[in-house]
Image 1 (cartoon, helix red, strand yellow):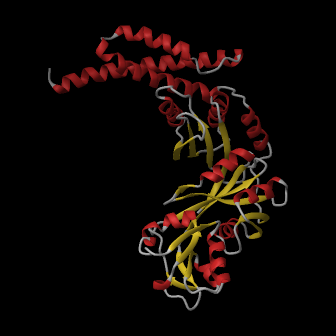
Image 2 (spheres, helix red, strand yellow):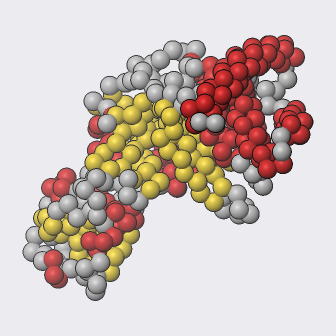
Image 3 (spheres, helix red, strand yellow):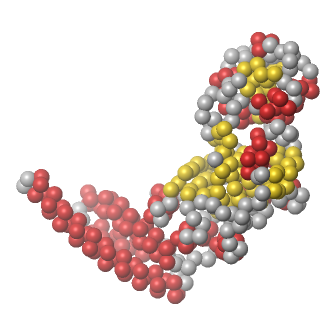
Length: 381
């Protein structure tokens, strides 16, 4: 047969498949309604296994694996279709419904905000970008920021969550999970690091360089030229600047911002020393209560996956794909003290008011060993 004739026959079969798929999905809708009335879960692994075993007998052995993949896709789209119409409930789902009942809140102009570091820190710059009037109180470490929000001393906290060069700030993720706080907004800052020192300092005389570990990581290639200098990590780039100023020495320097150089009376020995010209850090605004402000179009979650379950990540990604959700971040990290178990971090763009999205979150809350809803929020660019 000619290729064109073969393709015509394939087209006929494809049309038949489409017609049968439509008929199947009509029945799936009936199944969804029946499950809704009985409270039965959408996911039914035993039923899927029986179907796979039955239909695999319809094809030759060499095609059975391929047919399995086809039916797994059918199962996932069917479950996604059911999810759109199901009534899922979970602890986090109830909290989301409670927050939604308050409506989309107007983001405040003025707020009391906790930041880590000292005056001049990037977190303070982020707070000023988030609020027209930010009443900022600085704390020594990230735990101090969480404590301030926990105790009600500050309504919000600003924390770095990831850098385009150095990656995620894992300590902040861990604290979010521990304290069960929520992200209510985020902001992306372009970060420019500079080598700054006291007025009489010279670059060739520098013996000690202070900065935050993330900044040191972002300037790793630049720092290679200081072969005889001691590189010391400290809690914050602004803290590093203050340490240099307080020392009065001409052989110490810091990697920090221009704002800190001006603030602490230091001079710029070299500017824009970060390894990448496209260096930005994303800061999150956290709150003790779940709140959805106008423009909330981004969701962040943390979750584990079933251990020793082949294809579990692929199946989870299919759930997002079938709902038309665009993932903007997928990252994994080993869980300390576990045997080859990972925590997965997801950011995705969607509307928390969508029923299918809420059902997906409820499903993950009910079906995974560890699940954390980090928040639905908008991002300031």
